[in-house]
Image (cartoon, rainbow, N blue to C red; front, side):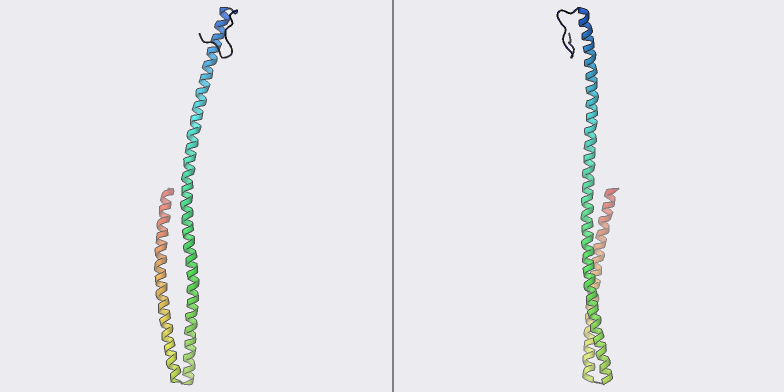
Length: 165
């Protein structure tokens, strides 16, 4: 015989009281068992939901790190481009200044008719043109490198878009 959770049968009580107590005790036991099963299922659902949220958080964290690395790469490219643009502007300004001085020297030579000055002016002009040619070649190489970097950046961006889809 099962005795209830609430107490045990007394030796002095009647048989009928004992049966009522056992029936109540069995009903209480079944109700508690059913409640524990429900709570266990609820707990299992909560654990599964927590695992899903944790996996999702890890996925988003990885995506964030990739995006952050991509942004850092793009920023460094932009900084490098900005610095090279400043250097290029400075070089262009120097070259233009050099050509201007050569042109002024040529004008002075033409006004004065000095053959030696005209010869040195031609040399300066040739040197200035050679400088500009080297500058143009350098800029073309830089343009090629920037186009290559941009292409790599586009590939990275496409890969990130595919990952997010």
